[in-house]
Structures are given as C-alpha cells and as structure tokens.
Image (cartoon, rainbow, N blue to C red; front, side, top):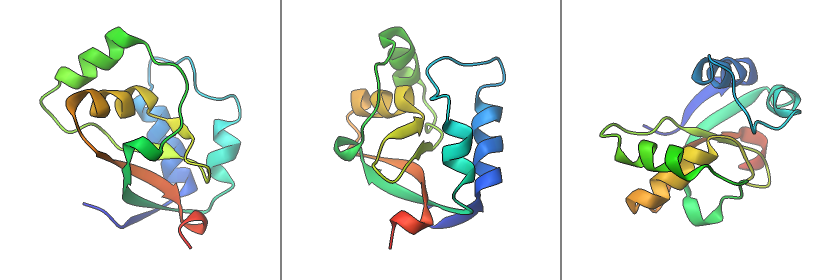
Length: 109
C-alpha cells in the first residue's frame, strides 16, 4: 500500500516502536529531522537512490531471510535513510529494486 499520509509524530513514534530495545546508528538529530515535517507519505522508492551509513552484515542477512515484508524505512529530503538502513540493505540483498519508505510530503512536490 502506498500514498498513506501520516504525521511527523506518527513517524517518530513508529521509529521508537521499531527500536524498543534501544538502537545504535540513528542520527542524534533524527527526532528533530522527523518532527520538523508535519506530514509524511508512504511511497515506493528505488533502493539505488538511497543514501545510508554502514550496515552490520549479520543483521542484514537476518532481515533478508525473513519471509515477511520489511517495515517501511524513513528518509529525509536528500534520500538519506533516517531509520531503516539495515532494512534497505536487506531488501537489496533479496534482489528488490524498490522499498516502501516514509518521506516528508514537502520533498515530493
């Protein structure tokens, strides 16, 4: 499903829910980067267009082996992944060309 509209607060809660046990690698300013955009949309993005940091290969392989769809990632205006770089790399490992992502609406126009 794409074109789902949500709020910045929804996205921040979503990121926190995905990482209930804590996380490493989330940019220190992720909360501000997310909440500065009041509206977000769920869209399909080309994986090759994404920018993200280093991944931990065992996590990527574990995600790639999952038989379910990967949760959507969260990207900023420059296609930098704010949350979900392991999921993006796992989708790439699976051979996927696209991935569902939440993007701020103002970057779509």
